[in-house]
Length: 619
Image (cartoon, rainbow, N blue to C red):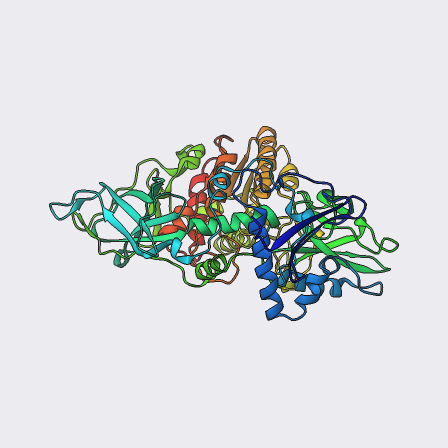
């Protein structure tokens, strides 16, 4: 509720829009939520974005008050931004060529947390809450860091009986993790993400465990022991539930953690406006939004240029991310939690558990079944403990991988068109394959082509490998304009594959999507699924590999991957059931067991060998 010394005045002016002010007795404004004309100007009742959640207008008010005060104290120019926020999201500069000035102004607005616009905050990015949203957005906002789970106070216990001092090779081992908060109090409900894995460093051996949230503040982990020796147990609180709640709050109200802009340009002028995969833009009511979905291949919306006599929606040329990740209105504790997560990971749960696995000098035998004889549909059923590292090489437990080397790949890929669509991790797959098969570049790799299509050929094999960066949202480097023609729709590329010919398609979407509300990823995945279905029906000689989201524990300011836990399950669920020519390259257990710390995993060659070992020999 509003405090007693505040009076709420709701001014509804249908012709000019809605403005909400909270005033104090001293005449100072506390919150100024702006609605431009025709944008929810007559809206009453609960905001659709808040329906079914525990988010209240009081929470939004308090957070905006704090962010406004803090931003002004840090950046004096924020005072003017908050006084006339809409002018910083729209082009108001004099002259015809204003794209650079417009971009600078939006960068400042983003730094000043000037997102107090109903056209952005009121509509729901998805009508129905996801299950994790229903659970986590029912939590209150974090106000005290002592409330979060503390790795230092939490404990992990070995449940499996080791009364004889050791366990046998291949046996199952179980653990139970109990989380405590910073005051030493037991957590009594779930929602945190806990990772557990086993390691014998001198053998280059490790395996991830499968973890079950018991919803009472405890977690049960289990895996097998596939090698002999002394095994160390590692456990971490990978994501606090309060971090999930904070990120879901941002995505629900503001759609993304990292904003894009669009450039409109012709021979008469230029302008920059905000862009998003959703038609909810600060400062732009829906009638003033350009629908650029046909240009992008997936939903993409930018504000219409203000210079209507010079520019229109058809003058859209490129997109560019804002230089500085957006500063959103949060509690002090939520801001500190994000800083902790970005600078102090991993949050390791200390333990002294050592497991002796007998007999000595043995490793779990590899199965007789070759991986290329295994049904690819079974890859959608893989879990964290479906494979392990030994001698720093990944070994699946369900089948035996062949030796994937130059000769193997050159034999496998003869008379093959390989199409790779995705981001820089997809481009890394092309780099690995190019070196392994000694492929000759047909497009010279320069800075200009860093985020652009690539191609290499092996003429004597009839092999061609092509890479296409996926369409928006796609984050380039700082200050990089990404023209529409250098990015490609996954659906369009799949639909362009003919009805005959031998094709291998590699798809990957992760870091560029996960900063947005996950309804964006869901939409793209469902469209990709339909395109794969059409392709499977059209061409009997196509195999598709979808590479999943992965884990990484890095220390990077304002990173985008905090929601990877939910994305990877969404990928698996939506793409499941496409038949035995579609493989789910489940990278999660590989990166977790490897303790991956990088957004471009150093063990990406293990992915290559894993999926190539499965698909080669099926044509």
